[in-house]
Image 1: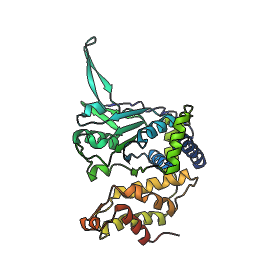
Image 2: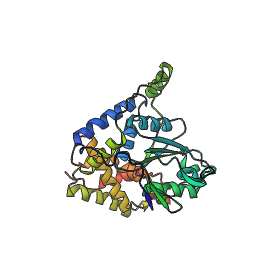
Image 3: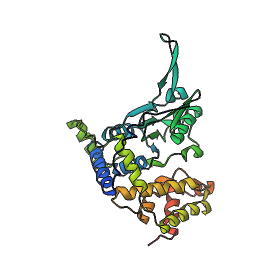
Amino acid sequence: MTLGASQQGKGSMGPPMTIDEVHALTSEIVRECSRVIVGKVDILRDVLIAFLSNGHVVLEGVPGLAKTYMARTFASILGCAFKRIQLTVDTLPADLLGSNVFNQQTGEFWFRKGPVFANLVLADEINRCPPKSQSALLEVMEERQVSIEGVTMKLPEPFLIIATQNPVEQEGTYPLPEAQLDRFMFRLILDYPTSSEEAEVIRRKHIGEATDLRVLTDPQTLVRMQQACKTVYLEEDIINYIRDIIVRTRNDPQILLGGSPRASLVLMSASKTRAAMNGRDYVVPEDVRKLCIQTLNHRLILKPEAELEGMTVERVITKILGEVDCPK
């Protein structure tokens, strides 16, 4: 049994959106976010690429880098329903998905929806969540539906999970295994702001936060943007370029585990979205190259001897990009 979701406005989605409209709207979204988020423009653009590619994101960084604030601001500007889940060691699947509750007045059970029933869900500190609850969340990411006691409920469209991880504290955590990390489109690393950016953060906090953020889209518009990004043209040379990069990761002597076919599909989809956000209806090699590290840095495992030599996944990816022939 499948219940119709609150998939907002699916019957009246509106006319198809052009690539020029996607370019103009995404540029405006990033500018509006930059009014309250200092720096991190590349991170904002990558999160938007993942959203429009129907993917999910892992944000990794030490506490205090505005990961939660960024997600909340993003949802506000996009006009999306936003939910934040603070994951802990005793989080249960029902805390995420929802559960059936008995109504004593009617003598019937009714389903109380969990926080995953939103357009943008922030799963804070996903590595503190026990494996059983991690699996429930990852199933939601893949299937975009919730099944409780034989009843299946679709999640609203669009749907994006932003999961955060603290790379410093590992005590009492359950690190996501590589097979589960592979479900995320991007792994984005947040670093400390520069000296000038930190001064600007202090200055803005002193003056007062901007509270008049504009709502630039709604869920229906975002679905139309996703559909427009899928229409971007992909030449055979670009398809072969993506293939060569991923196959090269499987044969590199410093890599223990290379990219799977899912990595190829993610890189293809993200490249098409990046092209649309730049106002092009076709993909160029630069689109692919700019997204390789975000796409592959959580999908590749280095051999122990390579790690002992001081190699990192990012450096190996950069080396591979220099070795693979780039289309003209």
